[in-house]
Structures are given as C-alpha cells and as structure tokens.
Image (cartoon, rainbow, N blue to C red; front, side):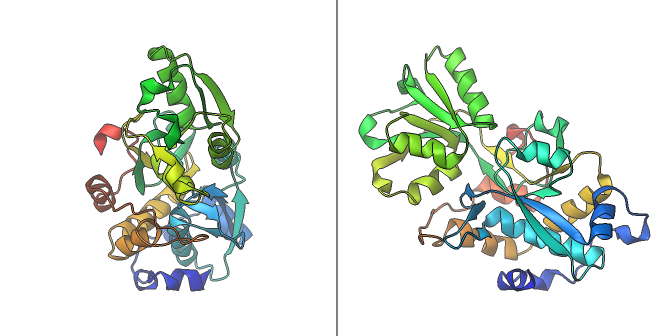
Length: 304
C-alpha cells in the first residue's frame, strides 16, 4: 500500500494538514467504523479501463484506483491508523450503489457518473473526469451517426446512465432499435465484436479503452455523435455521513490541486498502460483542468 503511494510521488503531500482534524470530534458513521475495525473497504471494477480494472496479474490498477489510494492514505493519517487494512470488494454497474448504501463498500473507485438522481441515494466526491455517452461500432458497418442506428440491435450495460440515455433516444427519435443489456462493459463490447449487436453505447473513454485493448483496434470506430453532454465521474460514499465526506473531499481536493495530479493523469491517459501497453492518447481537457482546480461534486454537466 505504502509503496504504491510513494511510487506516484504523492508522499510529498502527506505532511499537509487537512482542513480541521476530525480527531478533535467524536467519530461517527464511516470514520467510526473504520477506526473500530481497523479496515476500509473500497469498491473496484474489473474492466473499467483506465479507471479501475484488473491487469494481467489480476491486480486492480487504474486512475480512479490510484486517487482512492491517496484518499485512503489521508484517512489512515487522520485516524492515526498506520496498519489500516485496505479491503477490495468488486462491484458492477448494477451492484455499486446498493453495496455503498448497505455499508458493504465504504468508497467506490471506478467510472461512476455523478447525477442528480444518484445523489438521492449516495454522496459523491469531487469530480475527477468528464465523459460523454457515445457508441462504438465496426468501421465496416458504415454507421455514421445516432440516426444510423435506426432498426438495429444496440447494447448497453445494465445499471448505467448510458442505458437510460439510449432508451430515451430510441423513444424520442423513433429509432425502433432492439436494445439489449450486458452484465458488464466487456460483454457489451464482445456483442459488437461477434456481430450480436451493431453498436455498444457507453462512456467514450471506456470505449476508447476497450477498442485500444481489442484484437483489431482499427476495425472499430467511436462515434462523434453523443447521447449526452460531458458528464462528471466521481467516487461514491454513503449519504448523510458529513464527517467522512469532509475528510474524503479535503483529501481529493489536496491531490487535485497539486502538481502530482497532472503526473497521475498523464500516467493513465497519455502513456502506455497495462496489460498491453496501449496509449489512450487522451490529453486533459480545459474543462477537466478547471474542475480539478476548483473541486466540486456538482452533477450538472452544464456547470463544467
């Protein structure tokens, strides 16, 4: 745990003090649970490249995962728990919110879109990425835009905002699509790869990861047409737990505003990443730079 933390050059930030120590207060909620059990459970994904996924050694790696490791280090320091055990609990698009809500997972680190509807069920940390909902199809299909999906079989992952947007577009634009649901992103992409679906609708950065790691990346194209404006990603935690949220938000903001954040971003979006050493070539956008400089968990895409 500590070695990963040092590897990314983040140790220089560890000596900085969070705004207002919680140790001067009686612990409640998640912080109390962590202090009493000596452990914290983070929710991870197995195929959300490059945010949280399994590498060729079946070890969880990724941009969001690294951010969560930094937050955990801050929690460890704040609670004076040098031997804090970090447990990992795999989650899917369908299970991530229930597992946060029922207390199984304390902090979810993946590719979860922050929106107003979800904020009724969970809290979100500050935004660490902005993405839009698009589709991937085979280049040979000749599909040029969303209207080109009319009458075709299209898939999206169960429990995602992408599926909701797809259903809404199908109705509003009278596209008469046959909509299928996949249990995860890998299955959704596989349906396109094997011809069971003409397109897979998902966050554009996740599609980029799937294409880059496919057997024949040149066989696929990601649409310029989008089902949404750029939407924020953030990590989830339980609602109505202000003490824990304060620590998490302060830790994230400290990292985001540091020079190390650009290094961390570049590692996952502008350099070769495991398991195949592909480069996603996704420079940080002006909108994301602004969001990181002014940390917020605003769910409104227009605010970015």
